[in-house]
Length: 409
Image (cartoon, rainbow, N blue to C red; front, top):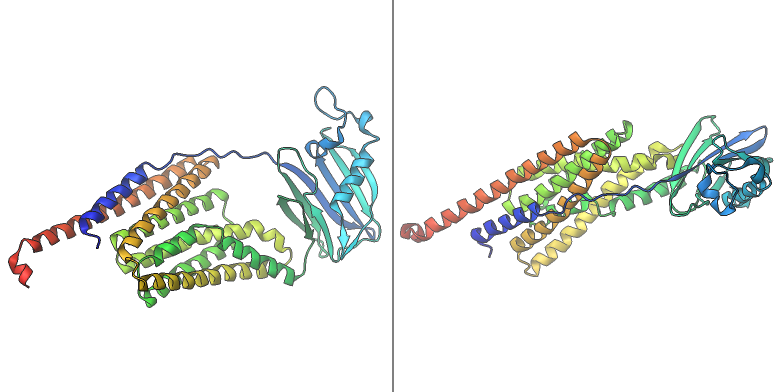
């Protein structure tokens, strides 16, 4: 059995651990090399225009002048070869058939440090079209491809992708988009985010099933509302970073509630706060991926949100069944809740500090410092409540032990 004295000492240890948390960590932001790609129909053919920075054609060993720019006269005979190689890497297809292009133009860019290419695919059209993006590489740095694609409606659709080379369907069917965003929802759910830590915090103490459902309903409804708001009116990166700091601090407070045995109403209120903050992060994840939905953004948003919420319910049910099984095997609830909560506090505080650093990098130093002080104030209040409760219980216990009358009753 955990006595109030042990609980008070453990709370002090938590306070010392938080005070000794690691400092800010510098995050190096790699420089990306950007390839601009335009695909549009023109005169019964399909026209592709590409702008390649010098870094992605380094393997060609093009002659350069003293200022580092290309020498137009010396590289003219190599440009058609570079254009043909780019077309081969792009590997534009309709269905499963590769399209064969002709090189309309290949020239040095206006900055004399890039190459502009124009490819024409005779008889090509926009149905079932796909291509390999990011197929060109740059030594020691990532490459991003910005694709501008002319839809059959006449509207231009912009997609920006980075990472390993991958084939992308241009304006895919709704079924393909739905399947893709189900997968994105699952990945967002299982990426080890704040929602998993909060879920563990809520399920550590043995609670009534009705109360657990109330917590889930509060967090899920707040998440759904925040996702909808973020999707309809996309929030800026600093705002989402600040909300993620709120989510991390809510996890810390949830863990401290396990230690202080907070009242159920406070747990529900914290679930609402967490749902709003964490839902903004999920919404931001969808907004970043939204261009991949092409013409089916609404269906993608609904599927993404439904996958996240249903997945959280399934994970919660699985975790609760496991927690119940461990309790039936005699696992001490109070000891398990306190020890696991301490580990969660450590992890959540690290996440909070890292996000504060990223928020400061975005230029919002005032906001970052304000969020840090507000959260530290919350933590100080929660720890003070924990200490007061532990001391009060200890005094009450000592009084009862020293009172024979109280002992007899």
